[in-house]
Length: 297
Image (cartoon, rainbow, N blue to C red; front, side, top):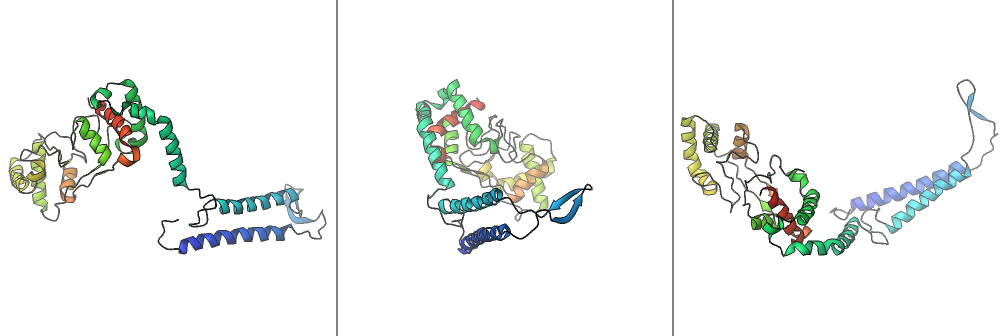
């Protein structure tokens, strides 16, 4: 709740919660009052011929159980967060709990990660014990984007092939995980006409070895030379320093159909690999880099 820019929601939630607790308490007290009712008085409801509903008050033990839960809930809101941005007397928070658990985990398993930190990644990729650790790290932090089998998905690279936007050398992989990557393929849809886009797509397809109309590809090459060669190179082999894709290998991060290639050129692409340096630390990233390196080697 502390993330809200207005204090209105804090007061709204707090007052609504407190008013609800008071209402339930008063309501229970009213309903628990004894009234002069004959124990055998019925409510006039009959089922199955002779099953009648009697006007019987709530058992006292049941009533006290309700009262107990109300006081329990009120006490909880005093000691723990629940009333807007009020942190509670104990100052407990999910973030604080996570930090404590992470601290315990680092103290317990930290020496294991540190043991592999000074070993070269190439050598570490041959160590079965290190790979098992790396596999668990991958399963915990990487499968959401790259898949449990590390073959990626549309927009998320396949880590098992030999196609790397920023280089597949051990240190490049480690840098990618540590610092993250942010791609920037600019959109050309407002600059190029539909015919121009079709021609460029034809030339890009030709670069990857596909059979296309030479006339369209020739026109597309002229546009490519003016607008694309800076990043992807004159031969279309890309530039790993910039993360520019190799267009000659027929490997497509966002799909290789004519429609998808046109979409990439017209709308641009802005992939984002988040940095894990602060979250995982260098020792874990080092082992994880060895595991990922082993997948394609």
